[in-house]
Length: 171
Image (cartoon, rainbow, N blue to C red; front, side):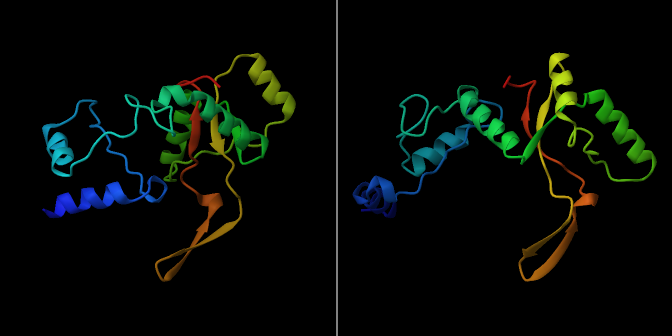
C-alpha cells in the first residue's frame, strides 16, 4: 500500500464532521489547466461537493449567493459597520488626481460616510448607484504583527474597502 493509498484509507475512516474542507480552485481563465487535472489525479481527489453534485454549503456559484450577500450587506449598514457610498467614478478619479498632484497617497475622503438620512433618501430617489463601504474607525489602531508593535493612524489610511459593488449585483 502506498502513502497515497494510506491517506485515502484514513480519509474514509475519519468522520465527515472532523474532516478539513478544502476547495480546489479553477483556473482564473475559467478553463482547467492540464497541470490541475494531473494534481487532482495524483492526490486522488474526488468531487464530493460542488455545483454539479450539491452539498450542504451551496449555492456554489457566486451569482446564486446574491440573497446571502444582500443580507449581510444590509446587516452591516444597519449596524453602522458599513455605509452606502454614492460617489461616481468620475468624482473618485478627480479626487485621486488632486491627491497625486499634492503628492498624497490616494485614499477615499469619506464623503458619503456621514450623509444625513435626507441626503441618502434624495440620492436613492434620484436613482444614484452606490457601493457599500466599511465604516472605518477614525482613531488610532494598534496591531501586533510577529513580535513588533505597529501603529496605524486611520486618518491616514490609504484604502477603504468596498464590500459590495452595486453595479455587479443589485441589492
